Image 1 (cartoon, rainbow, N blue to C red):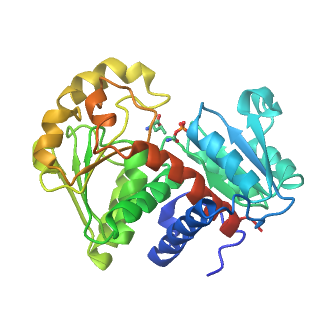
Image 2 (cartoon, rainbow, N blue to C red; image 1 turned 180 degrees about the vertical axis):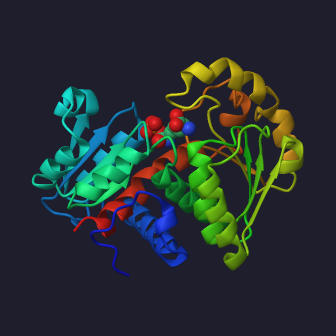
Image 3 (cartoon, helix red, strand yellow; image 1 turned 90 degrees about the vertical axis):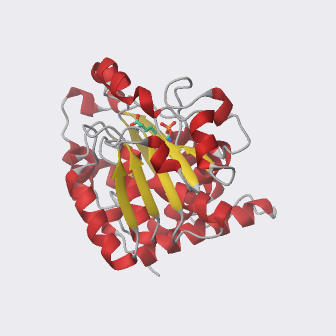
Length: 311
Ligand code: CP
Ligand code: NVA
């Protein structure tokens, strides 16, 4: 399957077969890493630019390490230190970077900036999180679920908390393509992006995936294979803190909720976590939590993404 030269702005643009191919390639990179092949020279001499408008620990470090483990290198570009901060356009920035580097991973405050970058860049642009979506996170998460549960089709994932979350949007798109059963428990005021949800519901009709909503977190976790949550206040939403925390109080993932989920349920969180808000210490540090394996898998899936997309 040939994906060279493609952008990865959203998984909406990828077929189920392509998504599965990337995930299987991620698992293969992980296997090879643990059998001693720390460096696989798939991208010798290539340079990846990381253009970030918001903070990051996992995405930044895992992409930079992924590049090195592929024989490539990376340059971290803080948005505020580029001429962008003085008004140079995204179009001209994209045209310029295209003459120096082989791919751009961008983390942006507003999703349209990714689309603008991709329009003018002649190299692949990869979404490293926007206000709308986080596709590389969702790909890593699907890889983690396949690794832990041995399958994706029919896996019951309960997402508890902010129904308007960017990571949830990407879980819905990937989950609908891969046949998962996703139940979202959130206040009715917090719903996924309308277009993304429409795409996911349409896709589900073809793949047999199930997507459903409830306001009751206990109902959502019953029989779940995966209990997933994310922060209640995403980057850039600080002004909404008070309102969102009040709405989301009943949606904390704690030991009481996990006991209803049962012992086969695994706990996932994209991280960073706000301990004591969306999740308690005993759950995130407990035996059902796979958050560190989940974070590690970002490295392996992103090796697959870079190796497959960067020419
Ligand atoms: N999950 C994730 O993308 O984490 P960072 O914000 O640390 O990159
Ligand atoms: N929803 C979170 C995800 C962080 C990886 C945020 O956007 O801040």
